[in-house]
Length: 238
Ligand SMILES: Nc1ncnc2c1ncn2[C@@H]1O[C@H](COP(=O)(O)OP(=O)(O)OP(=O)(O)O)[C@@H](O)[C@H]1O
Ligand SMILES: [Mg+2]
Image (cartoon, rainbow, N blue to C red; front, side, top):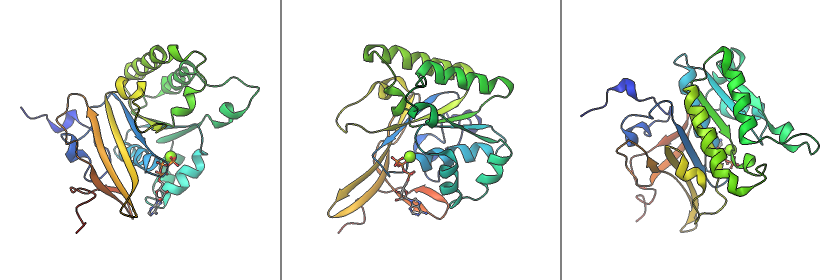
């Protein structure tokens, strides 16, 4: 049975939807993970832009980088992002100052969720990005509590009906974290050295309810952002 196009939403990344039955199942929470500079933030902003272009509301929650800088960088690929930010089609929420100010309360999964809930009270947030969630981790006093807190957090986002990308830094290539298990899908960005060259690729590690291609696919940073090519990152080798 074919899924009708309406049941899937586009990632806004050329070549990526094709790997996951035409797009993401809306209302679920996805993990975007990978090493530094692998393209996590770019992928996340393309997801928000795609929504904004179709009248959906986006929220970008930033924990480390200044959101204004992120938007400026993204504008190099698509300058229309400035207009969407100005029109509050893509809202920015900077949690950085709270996180780094020693004296003030650090954000917990619970406090981040209630703030998102507040922001979505007046208007539904269709697409949400939290970049990176790894920074919230440190505020959990008891690590054993993390699984429960994260599960509550994900349920809370699902209750809001938002489709979310949780961006996670890869702390350990060999270790799967709670985020990998609890989210509905895991998109892994690769950026590594091979034959003295840096290789960029993307891989769908998991996608619940979706027949997906799990191969590593080559990606390029085009003038319009990330594009996924339907070939292995090693294919050009002789
Ligand atoms: N206009 C561009 N053309 C080509 N490559 C670019 C361009 N702009 C950015 N890049 C590449 O994209 C990388 C940054 O991607 P991005 O910020 O999305 O990665 P990230 O995974 O979020 O990184 P971090 O872990 O530091 O947050 C840069 O390091 C650069 O190599
Ligand atoms: Mg980033």
